[in-house]
Length: 560
Ligand SMILES: Cc1ncc(Cn2nnc(CCOP(=O)(O)OP(=O)(O)O)c2C)c(N)n1
Ligand SMILES: [Mg+2]
Image 1 (spheres, rainbow, N blue to C red):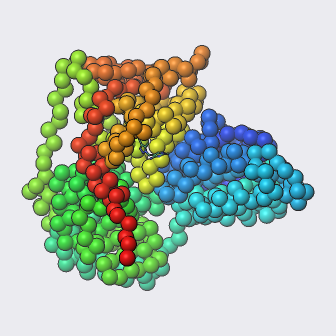
Image 2: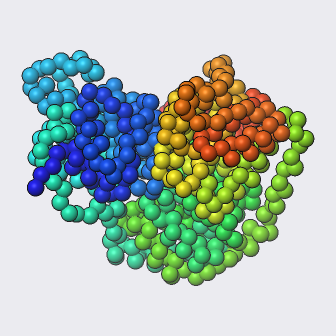
Image 3: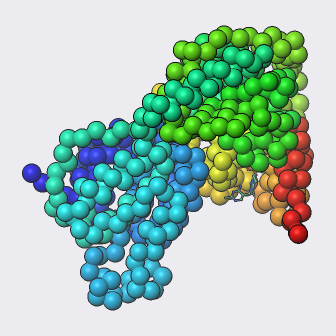
């Protein structure tokens, strides 16, 4: 029996668990969107622009732990979406980017087309997307659609990477085979010999260590290994740390959790224990200039085991085709418990004394703001921290068990958080996201707040108005770090127009913040609190981190 190409794609998206997709229409994808709308089990979320639709699809992956889909028109849409897809690649998110494409006859007829470069080559968008995806296919022949679509979807799920599917505008409603039964698996299994050898080697080294530690890394989430890591943590008795881009992937209320491992700006006492340990197992970690604070973290490769998504790397040995989930799971069964690192940590850990609130008329400080946000957190919170001082302030939040934390620290494309908050809210309706967004970042993608209002989503957005690009100021200042101030709170009323339900207000003082949070929390809809912070009031950690990153950026060119 048969169906159409668009309906085939829709039924496969439904089959892999999607309930929503994000879209911006254009004449290359209108018929395709019509076919998608026929599928009543998928809901279209219409976005203001393709970049934000991509950021929303990014947030949707984070909220659901699964895939997401975004639909755009050719070239003018696709090339705007591109940056969000590159971000999904960097962050290991299985986003399915679908673009309408030129009529299958156009190239053969030497037809010049609108929205294109004015050349007679119409493969350029797929070619560009092939650089930021694990697979990029163009569907011209409806008979090949099932094969191409299934292959692209399977690739996204197996490698946890975005894929690109281009569907010619006159093919979307062409007849093709109905979808036949099959499963769409995730990452493949390990090579058993390699897995057992890697585990045995790890057991041998870790059991011989005096104060080994475990560190949770960012890839735990994308490769579905959070639960396996938790089992290993419980079985080992080791002290545990999380890297900054893995915050929340390990339960921060666990008795052996030390905090964030981020070199000189990590949780006090945590870095010292990791750096002085005689053997550290990093599970899914990434060691970039940002996650090591300009390489100021004192990681000694001779004392590190890296459990990666598809391999385990010891100081002088690598075992390939070993899956992270299976390695952690098997190791948990074989490891000898050892609380040496926990004893060491308990000797030096510092008790954090909560900040005492000032008088209500006290001018708001970053520290007071975040100590107040801390009190809002609950197990169903999801904190979304934008690139900026929000990384550092957000990192210090103490997450209740079950609360989630999202950062885009690998790609760090400012403005991501607005679309990501939209997508996360759609993907996790049982959570109330709390977004921490700087004024500079917000100015790139502000209009997606109107989509949050349009669909009645209910995140609470803290818009931190400190007058500019403070994170850049602390790395390297210049006139380019100052931005034009907006009346951010007023923008919500602009987006509400006559039928929106967005709440917003400004807070200059601790008393106003208290009132704002009370009203926002009580409001049954989206809320934006614009907090006014002094331009130089940033976290101490940003000052330290900025200095190290600037120094690392400034390394002189090597000349022979
Ligand atoms: C798309 C994109 N364009 C430029 C940059 C560089 N950049 N990184 N952070 C910033 C400034 C962020 O400023 P805000 O959001 O106001 O954050 P804070 O003031 O640090 O709280 C820039 C301009 C970037 N990271 N991503
Ligand atoms: Mg700012």
